[in-house]
Amino acid sequence: MGGVDSAGGTFWLRDTPANQVLKKLKRQAEPSTCDCYEPQTELYALKTPEPYMAIAFGECTISASTSNLCPTDFLCACQYNGTSICLPTAIRTTTDCGNPYLGPTTYPPTNFTWSLSSPLPDFAYPTEQCGGTLAAAATLSWSTIQTRCPASQSCVCQTASRFSRCIDTTDIPATGAPTDCLTCKYEFNYNLPPPSATARLGGQCGGKCWTGPTNCPTSATCFTETSPIPGGYAECALTNPSQRLKVRQEGHEVFDVNLPARVQAIATPIYF
Image (cartoon, rainbow, N blue to C red):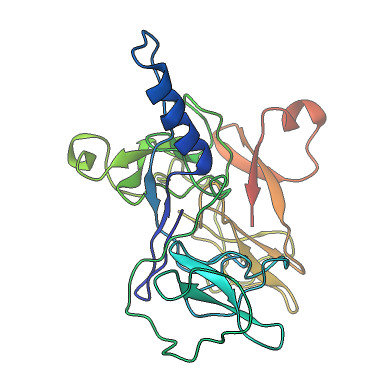
């Protein structure tokens, strides 16, 4: 389940029907010598609702692909002319038509929640990897888009440019440092044009530690890396390059989509 508030939003994953079944089975099995593990409840930050999340007192359509899920403690209640809106269950307990709601349609600023069957793709697991290029200490499978830690944790650098992990905010002073995990790891071994210069099409136009050209040719755009290291690299292109492969070579990093197969196997994909 998750929630969004007007000040910036919070989202959380809460108990699911599967979790409720687990609890019931655990009670039925007591006393038991086995260890029972149950899903955790975690809070995540979310700036805006997902397209399928309907908002309080907003229109909803159960059979559609968007706005089909009302917040917790709300239901998609039929109004008239085939429309429905998310109403608090304290006001309406059925979805039946024929009794349109005519009351206020505003709600005090609060955190709303939605029941989900699985986390969103960019959610990093609690205390697990949330960034970098190498899973140096992760115990769960990690995808490069999993960069959002629970609200009670921050993504903290463990090994510069290689591994970041979700750390409890109360532990940050004693574990790692809440700083950018990408540091300037090398000096450019050639003289770069100044930032005011224009990069070539397909050339670098920005990124962490970049001191070279930041302008692109006419009709081109400087696209910036979004994952796994947001802002780590930028490239001039006519359209979004979507993905590039990054590999370390002789003390510096090479970005190329046309690497040999044996090199691709050890390269790190970056996304724009």
